[in-house]
Every structure is written in structure tokens, then in C-alpha cells.
Length: 493
Image (cartoon, rainbow, N blue to C red):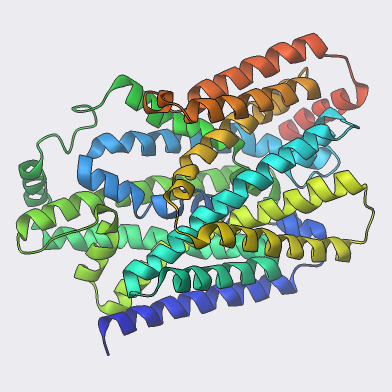
């Protein structure tokens, strides 16, 4: 049996497992709350790993190792920024958002929380934020589908379109039938696969390069600055990399996990699990790249054509083809976990935040679940159309969309949770200014100097604060919910 056959068998077992998990989740889904938020019943481990897996995507297994393989640890500042941002998000946002969203009319999406938090009878804020999620995530999903097509093309020699259809078919199937529970359970399994792969490869790889001292010596032979965080760093470059952490406060597909966790007490355990997973996974990704540098320095006859494939290539060098296939499954897991999370959030925005608000619908729960599944299908097919022609501009949209969500939603989320005087008008203006700033900054040469999330987040925060001060009027219902949230946090957290 050829190496490709062993690897393909491993991939097929993985894909079949994802569909089975989707079927299991389908059996546990009976209403819209289940379909969109898992009935607020996720345990800490599932919440933590599903948030991590949906966050990291193929960047963790391909983008980061590839960048470090080429430039060294100076590329690690982004990982440091993300880790700090993720910890702050779990610490400051997770517990309060879990309580406040339930207190405020049991909100099951971020736009519905905005609507309920500000008592916005016009529902303009809800619709606008729902549209932002729908538009951005449709292209975001497209970028993931493109990555899936490229994965099968480069790993197995399939055509790009064949790979695209395989990934789309599996992700759509388990997301459509199982909803949020399927997405969370599959993300949990995918997070475990990614984590184990990133731990195992450096451990076994070190034996190939002659141990720690020999590995370090080989790396320094290639580039004496490769093990330094500072040697080739610039101040604006470090600031831009660290600023990625700001994006966490406004990512709907990540913070929705905070709303779905079983109880506020369990956010502490989830934070420890999630940050522990993240730190070890990032260290594993960095070590994989550095050990790869040493290996190819020591084996001059071997060559690496694509630095971003260092994780895959090291797995193929170290392990039996079937186990190497598991390493490939880890890459596919990273891609699919993000696609599925974005799909379910986009579906919820379409049904819960746009359809309900525009048509003032009072349909049955069963009808809404059906509409949610139709929304998943519609968004998936639209994203598939965008991804059909391999387009690098879609892939580059990932960092742009991260900044867009971070600047548009991040300051609003933080102020909504911690400042009682924020108003719906202030939130709408701040959200708009954040989104526009990112768009303008990101489409000029300024983004080469400083990542667009920095000015976008700062301006959004300032505008929201100033406009809220001007437009604030006491609202008894808002005050009661804000105070109730604080009391419940003190009692239960």
C-alpha cells in the first residue's frame, strides 16, 4: 500500500468521525436555543478547546511554523499578543457575558445581546451588527474553504475543486444537522488532535537532530538571530503583532462559547484549560519550525519547497504513513473547526438577528431550527461560490476581518459589560467608526506600518464613550439588569 493510501485512510476515518459527531448532536437538538447555543450546557473542557480550535485555524499549524521557519522567533510576538488577548478575554469578558446575556432576555447571539442590553426598540443596532457578521463571515468561510481545497491539492494531488467540495460537504453536513453542539464537539476533538500533533512532533523531532545542544547549534549556523525575539524586531512591528490580542474581545465565533458554557463558575476552569492548551500548542508550533530548520541544515540532500508545509513534512519524515495521515488530519481539523464555527454564527445572525428583527416573526421553535439549517446551507453555498476561483485576496481578508470584528465589536462588548452609561447610539456610532477606520486604514499603505486594529479599536472606544456621555438617559430596566448581573457574579463566580 502506498504512503498516500495510508494517509488517505487516516483522513477518511477523521472525516467519518466528524459526521458521526454531527449525528449525535442532531439527536440532542430540539429548539433554536439548542441549535444556536447548545442549550447553554457546554462543559469547561469543550468550551475551552472548541474556542481555541475555532480561533487558531490553519495559522497554528501552517502559518506560524512557516513564519518562524523563515524568520525565527521574532515572528513569535504575534503568538504572545494572542495569548495575552485570549487570557484577558477569558478573565474579563467570559464570566460577565455568560451572566449578562442570560439576565438580558436570554440573548443567544451578540447582536441580540446589544439589542436587549440597550433596550433598542428600533432594532437598528441588532440589524446592523447582524449584517456585519453576515458579510464578513461569508468571506471568512470562503477563505477556510480555499485553504481546504489547497490542502487536498497539495497533500494528495487532487484537483483544487475536488478538495474544496470534500471539505465543504463534510463541514456543511455536520454543521447543518447538529448545529452549535456539533460544532463545539467536533471542535473539541479537533482541538485535541491539533494539540497532540504539536506536542508529539517536536518530541520525536528532537531525536532526529541530535538533541537540544546539537539542534541549537544547527539553528544558529543557519541564522544567528533566529532564536532572538528582539534582534530584527521593530517597535511598530512588535506593537502590531501584540495588537492582534485586542481582536479577541470582538470575535463572535469565539465569545459565543462564553455564552454557551454551563455555568459562570466553570469559566475559571475553562480559562485554565483554554490558556494551557493555547500556550503548549503555540510552543509546539514554534519548536516544530525550529527543529525543522535544524533538520534541513543537517540533511543537505533534503529540501523544503514551501516553509508553511514544515509541520506536514516533519510529520511525514518522523512517522509511519498512517500516523503521518493523522498529522494531516490535524491540519484539516484546524481548517474545518474555524469554518464550522463561523458558519453557525453566520446562520444565527441571519435567522435570530436579521430575519426575526425585520419580519417581527413569532414562528415556532421547530420552524426557526429549520430556518437555521437553511441559513447554514445558503451561507455555505454562497461562500463556496466565492471560493470556487482560488483567490489570494480572500485569504488575505482573514487578518482584515479579525481587525474589523475586533474594532467594531470589541469596545462595545467591553463597555456594555463594565459601564452602565453606554448607550445604543454610542454603540452604533462606535461600531461604525471602528469598522470604517479598519476598512480605510487596511486599504492604504498605512497598514504596512501599523496593523489597522490599533487605530480602529482606539477610535471606536473613544467615539462610543463620548457619544454615550452626550446621549445618556437613565433607563430603569437597564439599571436593574446591570445591577442584577453584578450581584449574580458576586454570588456565583
